[in-house]
Length: 287
Image (cartoon, rainbow, N blue to C red):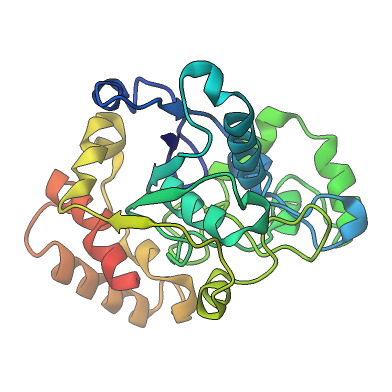
């Protein structure tokens, strides 16, 4: 069983302090976890094929890990012909993406999707190299110049800019750096939209188990410092960007008030219950 960790394609790891494999290890299975490139370093991409940075490096890391399993797992008592790939949240969406990519064909035999698919609104991204470069001080719109500029930046600075840029769907949240549809190229992971691939039947057909659990966002209470920092004092920031409502306008303030009443009522928006609803109820309506 190969585990793909979650974290919004922005954070997290396959380390055992978060996902302890002890229960699975008592069930006569071999468990494999791995890490993959995240955020800007994992999902930055350009349209210009000559730059050889098409995107989805994080997903390609997963394919490499599965190839390693095929080549080496027998040395650890595993069966390369009986591989189940499973993941949670963004990890679950990643597993679904693996099913959509011809580069992963033959590398696994069944999948388990836990609270995430490739068609989830947060799982497919847009190329944002120009916005990243602009934030760091580059005014060019030329992709080659942008790439040259970014390559000269310190890696730590590139990671920090992830916290500055806001998501286009929900401005109050950091931008998601997610899988994207690539311009056709020799190393492409995916060149069509997930929904189109699913509709056409052009995907890896293996048994799938998928689902979610109620109140699963109680998980975030594990991170007490994160939960306690969510005060939601400006609910205008939670209004989706594509609704076209200008922040600070009368319509924006009215909408923010309606959001507060609908989701929180008379409760403190920073309460744990409200934090859970943010990750479950709100996302269910968005999906």
